[in-house]
Amino acid sequence: MREDLKNRLCEAVDQKFERQVAFLSELTSHPSTRGNEQSAQGFMADELATRRYEIDRWQIDIAEIQHLPGFSPVLGPYDDAVNVVGIHRSRTQRGRSLILNGHIDVVPAGPLDMWDNPPFEPQVADGWLYGRGGGDMKAGLASNLFALDALAACGLAPGGDVYFQSVVEEECTGNGALACLARGYTADAALIPEPFSEHLVTAQLGVIWFQVHLKGLPTHVAYARTGANAIEAAFPLIHALHEMEHRWNASEKRPAEYRHMDHALNLNIGKIVGGDWTSSVPAWCVFDVRMAIFPGQSIDAAKAEIEQVILDAARDNAFLRNSLPEIVYHGFHAEGYALSRDSSANAASAIAVLDKAHHSVSGVVLQREAITATTDARFFGLYADMPALVYGPRAEAIHGFNERVDLESMRRITKATALFIADWCNTEEV
Image: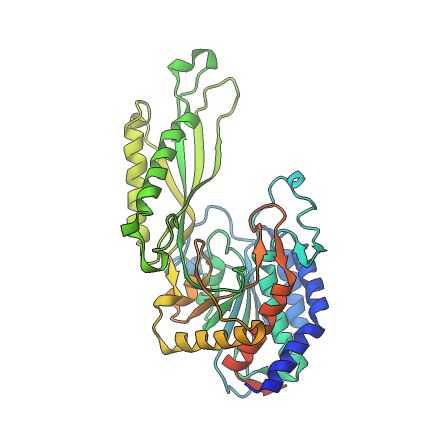
């Protein structure tokens, strides 16, 4: 890429950066928790239409994706799950195609009184934007969009087809990204600006979600010894699951990407509900579990071991052995994915182009990182044979209180993304 074009693209990002921050603030103000993404998706679709992209906005149909690899089971209705894709079709086809992917859904804010400011009233202070979803990952959606804007400001467009994806369900299933694949959206590479501090993600874990349903024997608390407490019955099962977690993290179980980590796989009891009355021995309990798996680790084998661990622990309980728990899978059925294992020339080329773009903007070598979370990258890398580059801004307290994103980091990511697009896709005049 010519040096003058690099400079022009970076200057174009700088010139529109105040507008980009305002865009991010507006997008973050939409409380797009699962099932409530429509207003944010409407805003995104309007912004893409204003820029004259072809708009594809559709309701996800479970029947169209449930047979596909990577599908995650869901418990609730799907009449509120809407994806938005903005499409640029190149006139010249001089370069390679690209998917710019990001998710619009955010996790719940939790107790509002534990935030310094309301989570959906974004605040900018000391170079950070605060608000739920600002970091994870609406800043990434903003960087994708304003990187394309930088090309347009220079009188250019990508010389290959580009699909700007704003998807739902990343935080719980990934079915939004899967629905894009089912709809036919593929490309030579995908770029996903998740907030991992301007590092290139070389590997990510898989995730399994499940619920454990327990039934007790209710009675008045005055006669508690004659009943069976379903909530307390969960405790030994949880203990057994944590022992399994310890075994899975053993050094001999770790693949090369995670050999340096003592505890990459985390089990989390994310939610527990049960009982009906304080003075009644609870008749029921349900607890929700998230367990991670390594890239290459079989989901089916992991589920079989999870089930065996729970049933063995239940059979050690005098009551539960005659009232065995029910295990219900919902949400993530996500395989791990390692970009580092993609030996294709296409992957090597994409990484090299991103390396160069990052260095041009930051002046430092692009760091690689294996992460202990999951992203939508697995759909592109595992099921569509395209390298998925996860590379986004620095953010803090994601999924926590006072989530924030570093605005200067977002500026650098936007510039690097613009350079990456121009190099990977080549350019054509508008």
